Image (cartoon, rainbow, N blue to C red):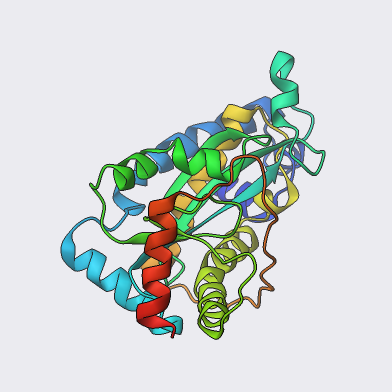
Length: 272
């Protein structure tokens, strides 16, 4: 009954009080059940959400991404998404949760593979935190920076260009640069589609959460674990049509010389 209660919440996005009425339990009891189930699910996170590290896993990830549009070296598509928070007591930190659209949220970072499997999730930052700050403050970012991970990520223009994180060209001039941007867009859309599938499976994420930020982060991570389990078990899903809209430059965005040199090499080698 506890598992079913939590799963129904994930699947419907209904409020705790509704479930308390349905199952003859008080709202606080339902809240505790969901918290307990989330902790149990999240204990499996490291087994179910895995970034490609071993050589054959890296090769497979790169091969799958290359098959989309001929974009080389990519082992993951990265993006952020805001999960709305309603009515939670945010105390003195309330301003940190106000995102650039003016509402309270958790900004979650997801990296996915070419088959919509989540390979990394960071769910702990308040909505005012910029996408680029999250990746560069993450374990994955550190591991790429010091050479412990192979390949590169593909992200939108909200991210700073690095040798291990390639972004679109803001004002493409040559045919090669325009071709690069087209293939970049077709490849990166996988992470947008992954978010679409995740929120479609678990409407509680699309509708918003009426819980504390710490509880919200637990729920978000649990939904990511369940998303992967569904994929691993072969549950079908749609390839959602997503119109990719590039994001204008924001405070953390930048270009490092070595990142630009790496991007130019890719353009010369693959998109001329």
